Length: 123
Length: 107
Image (cartoon, rainbow over all chains, first blue to last red; front, side, top):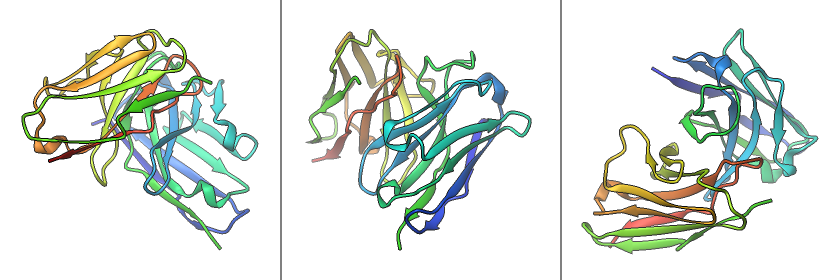
C-alpha cells in the first residue's frame, strides 16, 4: 500500500524552528517528486515547497523562502521540511504529497497525501 | 504568478441535483488542471487530473472539462457523501497554486 506518514509537528514559539518528516512506503521513493502543502485553520490549501526525485531541484513559495528548506533522503525514503524563524501565520496542518508522474519531475497532480501534522506557532 | 479563481465559494443543492463548479486561471494553463475533494476533517483526495481524466476509483458522477483558462467540475447527481470542499489546482509550472475552494452542502 502506498503510504505517507508525517511527523515532527508541535507547538513552537515565534522565531523558533521545527523539522517535519514524511516517511514514504509502497513505492519507489526516488522516482517521484514530492511536495509539502499546508492548510491554516479554517482556510484553503497552500502549496509550500517541492523537490525533484533526485533532490537536485527544489522550489519554495515566496512567503517561506529563506526560512523553510525542503530536502529528502532517498536511502531512507523520507522527505523533510526544515522550518526556521517561524511566525504565527505558519500555523497550519502540513501535508506531504506525492507528484503522480514516475519521472521524478513536477508535471503532475498530487495523487497521494499523508494524514498531516499540526504546527502551532504561539507564545 | 497565475491566479486560480473558483466560483461559487459555496453552494447548497438537493440530493440528485446536478452541481457545477468553475475554476478560472488568470493565464492559459492548457489542460494542466487537477480537482481535489476534501471532506470535513479529512485529507484532500485527487479526483480529476489533466482537466478531465478521472482518478482511479472516483465515481463516474464526477466529471471535468475545460482547457486554457476556464474549467468546470460537474457532479451529475449529488450524493450525501459528496459534502466536501472542492479545490482546483494548476500544475503546469511553479507555483502549484490552488483555488480558494468551493464548499458543497446538501439542502
